[in-house]
Length: 283
Ligand SMILES: Nc1ncnc2c1ncn2[C@@H]1O[C@H](COP(=O)(O)OP(=O)(O)OP(=O)(O)O)[C@@H](O)[C@H]1O
Image 1 (cartoon, rainbow, N blue to C red):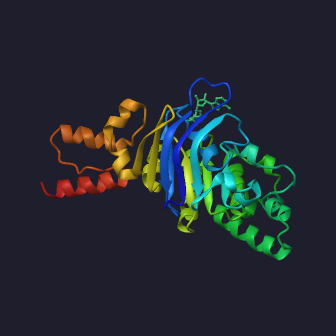
Image 2: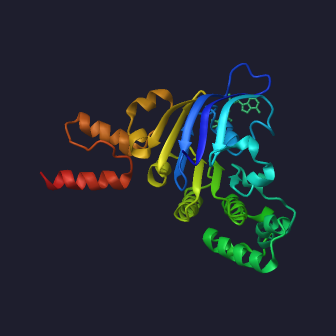
Image 3: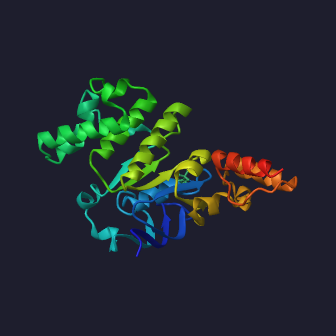
């Protein structure tokens, strides 16, 4: 039994002619990092909303099939039971920040205060997540006066403070520069090392190749691939289906065509460098 399971899930938004998710069956393990890829409109955000229990419910429409968390149908959980288990990080941190408090420290503490957590425990937790997300130096600032990258780290911190086991994160770096993007991935990597299950929608394929465990590829609502990242991302046929692949995969293919032997399943720059060194030392 998977930790999170989707069984033949088909979902159609109200008034839509076609389903946005078509007969998707997946089984996700606890503690793994899953990246969801696919062209615009392929159903990534919809899939996230199904996994976090917003579809059906918050969104109307028609859903067939079943979603299970630890063997129990999501429909059998109340939102109050689900919220501490699944944390959701929005694409735009501006939507995440509540604005109910006027400094970053209080913003991060806000969710815990609402749950009636004791002050000492709140202090402890907020301190820990601020260290993890490198936001301690922003503690006194107004959350709305931060840069996009800083806001995204505060948004991550406020979700982390609630200590969910599962994080669904929708394109957290789409508005960030390369440095802030690396910082966000570094935080996600730490979350994974803490044993969290991560489901991340992301277009930056090089970072997926480096950090994720498994890749789920969607095309027009259908799950066309699911598997270990090397298996999925080295599949050149995905290029014809509008799935971007890492540069090392394209380069490896070119080199093989030129008669230079390159192992299958090279997907990162570091793996390519290692392989080229090996090949050159044999010459
Ligand atoms: N609220 C909605 N009502 C009706 N149709 C919707 C709604 N939200 C999304 N859709 C449709 O569902 C399909 C999948 O959309 P979704 O946002 O899940 O794709 P996506 O892969 O996340 O796209 P992107 O990469 O652009 O964020 C699209 O055809 C979209 O037009």
